[in-house]
Length: 146
Image 1 (cartoon, rainbow, N blue to C red):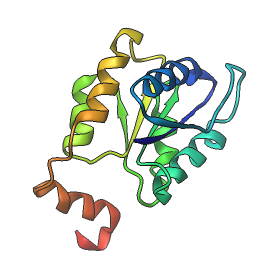
Image 2 (cartoon, one colour):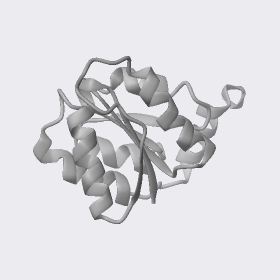
Image 3 (cartoon, rainbow, N blue to C red):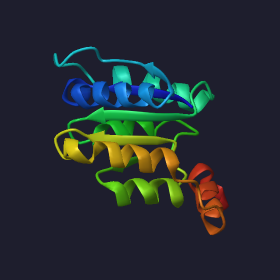
């Protein structure tokens, strides 16, 4: 799978760990930065990563920040992106299962590093359930369908 990554300075360390893990699993990683823990403005790195998902250049995205909230807000401004803030295995599972999240946002300050591998595996391996959830996603994408 081709996966876009983006982070600010507060999510840089987790981005690097996840990139390494994804490559070890055989995924194609496209890293949109940042490239250090030096303070940066997160939209400059999150938006291009999520644009790659929206355009279909990447199948999924994973974005990182201090809390993951601002990053998800940037991501969800883009048509075709469904970003979920994820903080544990269950939140990752439901993001995929019920919301077909194509972008996962992780807050490095709020997620224990020991949980990262399990969260990543859940995000990658959980299929969208479909069914009644399709209608809800259509309503997200087109508010006139409500």
